[in-house]
Image (cartoon, rainbow, N blue to C red; front, side, top):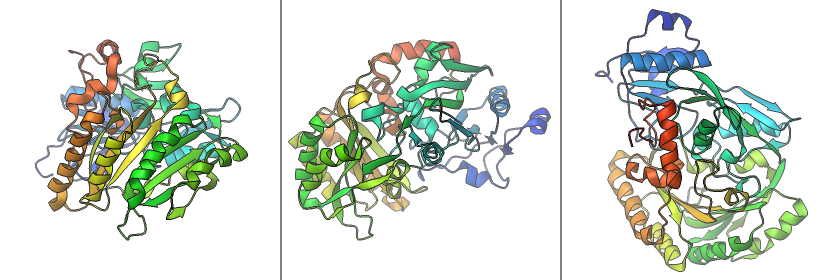
Length: 455
């Protein structure tokens, strides 16, 4: 940190800035620069903790005038670490946590510093919900801009399918509203194109009446893992929209380190129908524990919180399987049997229903096929174990490659996945380049899964 040169703050900006401007050595700087992924250790020359649009405009202008790299941080994870910069300017939106729920129009206006825990809590007061992440500490901004796989996607679509408008501060310092009626190309691009086009200072979402769900893990011993994943494949072939089922290979949360397989349903429909729809899942195998029960919707988004603690070392590999074949299942189970860390898990999201009934070109998010999204999530605590854990994740992913499509979910891409960015945007990439050229021709916002305007 001692070698990091502070970025000078003009007197006018310092006098009017509503938030905090933190330079190396200032109180609060060390805490503010740290990201969720403990592998990321960068030291910005300035952290601009914004509270208003005016702060965001000043920060963008300051970064460009200083000629430094600009990073944008929301309220959540960002495993790739693109929310931080070494020596440049970090625009920190985490203090921006305003939220307004309109129960009559069933809409929610929310600022980018919010996590899904905070969003869900505010919406639940009115019995409403929007498709959010499966870990409550996920930020609403990053998840939304990257697509938004979540528990309600079968019935209510991805997060981007529920976005009605967004307020955006552009590289030129203009504040614009993007919607189907205003700046429609920008609005299209924001729904899956990431933070490439400006700083989104607020989101407007459609919300749905979802007060209670039937959800919880069915936990099986590892010896039943192959059968459990095969059952998951067959069971999800005919699930209704209201039922989304995830699967995972992970370690028991009781501290024993025991390897287990979990099937996790979330049914957002009528209770009587829900019980019938999950009956065969609950009857499968000899579960160690059955925790499926009615619960408030916000609770389901906390079920996996323990598997994603802040500050530990993370390395992810992800993609979409062509199918959950017996061969793919065998690779997953064998790899998990020799996993080097008790914090590591392999997770499968089943994309189906309403999320797949949107044309691939209707939003920038192109992955609209019924599919299994797979995440190999390696986590550990000691830097001495870094090489072994990264090697395991890469080897596991390479073994799965013959069973993968050429598509990627950008929200899960790691720092070394830059060569796969086009797979994240698919056939929409060239159209995204055109939008990028209009709103950020100089690629000011390049610390992301970047769409190069010079492509």
